[in-house]
Length: 93
Image (spheres, rainbow, N blue to C red):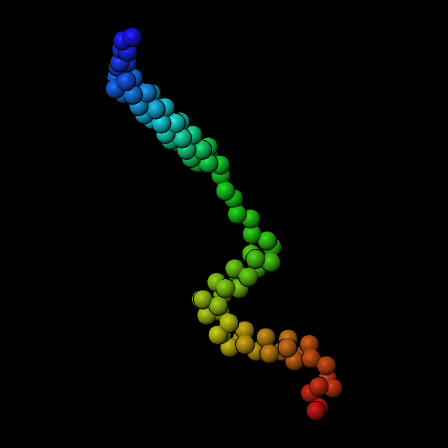
C-alpha cells in the first residue's frame, strides 16, 4: 500500500493566510467603530448653565478684582449695614 503525502505545507500556508485575513478584518472593524464613535461624540454639544447665585458671585468677584470695595463710601455703607444688622444687646457687652 502506498501512502501519498498531502501537500501539508501548502495547506498550512492557506490556513495561516485565512487567519491573518480574519485578524486584519477584525482590526479594521474595530478602527471603523472607533471612528464612528468619535464622530458621534463630536456632534454632541456641551452647555453650561450658571445659577442665579453663581451669576451674583461672578459680579462680586469682578467688583473685588476692580477694587470696588476699597472705595471709602462703600466701606462706610457696608459698616453701617453690619451695624444695623447686629442686635443692640451685643454692642453693649
